[in-house]
Length: 351
Image 1: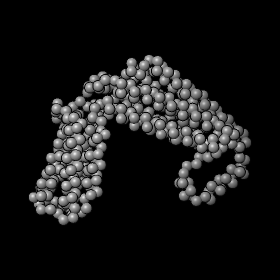
Image 2: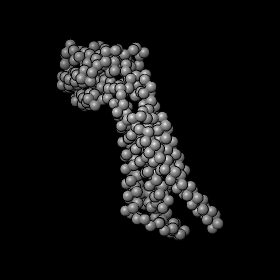
Image 3: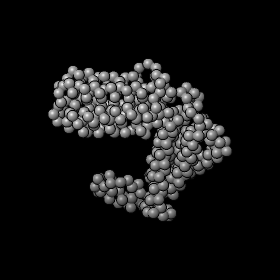
Image 4: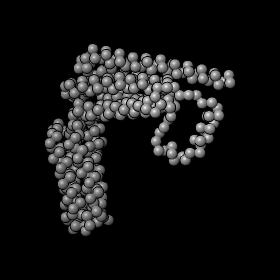
């Protein structure tokens, strides 16, 4: 049963996070990165002391209270500094600062909760250390925080493109360039029966969508071109963001980049949808819907470029042309694919 002193410390540390929910204005005294790192080290050291002194036999009540109170002071100081940084923060940085504080403080709460349990507290101390380790890499200004988020979207786009390239390579290595031969009715029934006899667990070993048709392969290639155009646009925006000036809270420049990040997150989802849609057998409506979303979001980003001067008019024009060409090619292929599907349907009805 936790002592009254430990209970009070637990609730005080928990209340330290409530400062982010209050309407109280952040102080004008903004701490430096070095100050935040020092405070995180204090949290880390206090947690280590609790882990060392409270694992196994529980120390005397006065020593227990002293250890808990020291950790409380460290957590409160760290939260206060994070809150002070929100004074100049836009929505993205503010959210990141709240998460940073939570990642440090929440493991401390678990540690305090268990410090009288006589259990081995090393796992809880390790979680505190993991939280404090993130402080050194945390962006503490609007520009670096926005860029980190843009870089995260860029990484997803590149990973999706890589998976699509691997799919293209697999098709080439397994089947070459020749068109798949059409199977007659008996062959199709035999294949279906053979598949039904297979152990279901084999389906979980890895995806094998089989051989793509010529039009499906062409759609895959054109989808890759569209993703490449969107990625090139995002990359150019990232460079412009880094080259620009300080982004102050409430400024039009900051609002513009916040809006850009909002569109980038929609672009990420659209690219992931397109990457999933190009696997065989393709649903051409899904490919059309996802590719249109990629095109429209990227086009909107370019139209609302937060710093067109930094990107450059010539590069914006070139990126727009690359995007439009890839989209037009996809539209032509989708129309062709739909026509072929309609022709096949009419042929089956005639039979």
